Length: 447
Image (cartoon, rainbow, N blue to C red):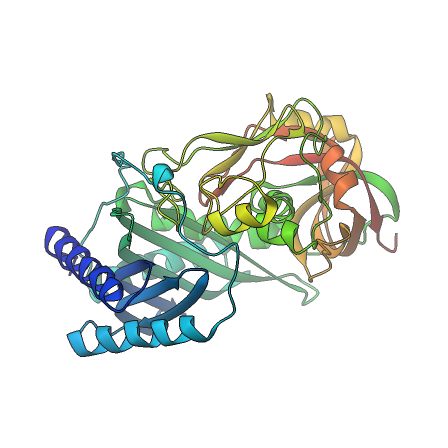
């Protein structure tokens, strides 16, 4: 059952307005409220049987009040008058007993979002557990049919999610966002003649159900990916070019954005301290946020502070020109918010795209990383050392799978060592990344 968007929007906006008024009556100099309503279905199957069916319907209210420079926050999932008043009172009590924070407060009123653009993010679809099971089972069946007996299923899953968000504050701003999301995934385990096993997966996700890949395509691709990893070799040890496939290269961009985030910077826990005006990538590349892309998974008209989002560059022609800032972190750094309270929105790398086959040819000999493991990334120093698996490239072409590889470098060197970006951008997330080729990393194998 889908959300009645008009009714729920009115309900949430009315509640937000009442909470703000109640906070004012209780003496708060300012207040802000985040309200949400979510519903969805999650279903998984394994070996032809339905394993899990979950329906969820949740609401939540996060309330923050300010008494001058003192701040208090409290939350509830109960929208009754009694629960709301109790939660507001608790937030006020907390605020009265906290220390003053000179950086606390709402974002400037003049930065609030005005006219909210239509972002084409709301495409609800009623789906029963039976219809969801039919799709998941078809996905799994296609995976097993493709394998000719060499693969067993590790499960297929289908999920639907509909979400309404309302944010309001005592500047008089109340913003509304509605989004739908559908996903289908499959995981398989392949076995070779010697008994060696490899697991892999594939998934599809989108705002519209119609935009998903077919169940047969998802299942087939999951099996093909598992089969190609069988009978891995050991990689040579040395310094080699390294390419990250799109679903892994997003991690590199995430590390960059994490180091440019205001929270890491004012806490002095970033390897990119004082990096404004300094190169972090080669001059051929920029990092751009595009929050108003129609139907994209990361699109938003305003951030968690109510500040209007806009297209902007964090890195232009290789040089850092903006940090990633909320109102609070901006004040900590003596800067102005960039409209990124709560995160970034549809970030991508700009640069002349290179066909992936040409990237492989340019490597001549190196490592194509399809999976990273472990937590060996230090955002304070930039030191990077992780386990990896993927494929070895020789004479400019993929030759064989490799596993139990260690890749190591420093993020500063890695980012400045970006050689090329591919023409295969993965649009399935908030970070829209292609294959990324680095000029050199230390590769640890046993060959």
